[in-house]
Image: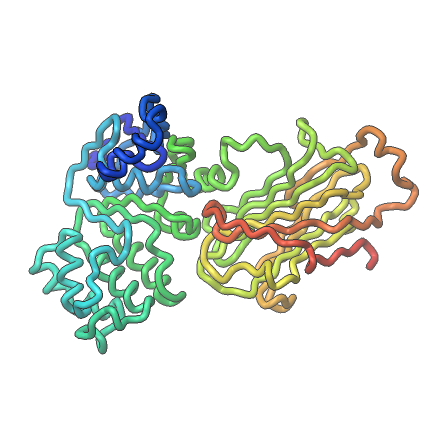
Length: 431
């Protein structure tokens, strides 16, 4: 049975502040100061947050929804939750709906935890008898029994979030919309949240689940939609969708890529990419080259160390890079952390190369979390005058110029943090 049917939904927003919000006196003063400007026609810039979105969800199905920030995921859930109206198209929903869009919305700081449970439950659509019946379970889940009659303004941020999520997670609805709420609290509570969502998903309830946590999407969803720039670019098997998420269809870059298998547990390299300079996928000798890796961190762990080698056809490493600068630390938050190493003047001879990567905890070989070999195969070919710049009789032992590292925490969330390569170590074969 189809419980959600979305047909050609689109949502348009106006760019900039609305003039209608200005006071009359301010508008009159502006007209007197600039009379000619007032006569000019006003340009109304708009953009489409969603365009031509159509899909169906069957009863009991768990649909994952992924994409970069700004792709339109939250806008779509707000339309389905009747928080905002679509500009075009329509959606049919059959069943009682619950939404976990912004955990804690509606909590009043002056009220106690007990009072806020009833208040927030009512806002989320729970009936009073449902809240009474589930009250002890909610409090136990949030682990705030001692402080349930204390005003929430005295709660720590973790206690506040735990109680808010506990209320939302115990909604009894046929359809549930979940928007990036499994990153709340500490590691133990995140595991509990994921387990609760697993119970909901396996209880025959229909769920649309939005998250940047690839491990959670893989665990909960068999079908996943990928949104990009307000449009659906894929709808189908979760493994294929995640591959499309890490290597977006709109990307015009060429190079060698690696994508991890769906369901990989623990911190791991979810994607590797060597951006080459030639349209045929080869890299022109002597031109700048970029190595890019997406490190998936299901739960915060901190102190992660990453390194990689470029290895020739004889399995001999020709260079080795790793991050030692503490300013480039990553893994303290859950999500996808993008590591980019840009090498302005690489000196790699002609031939075929692959990458070997190491991901470890606390920068120690004894705490190795993952080692990959033979990924991102690429070729280096001769180009232009670079042919005469190096002595081809030196063999395969080559140093690379310093690369410039860039670490983006929770990739896709506009958290770029460019850093210098002060902590970059370089090695060659035989050292």
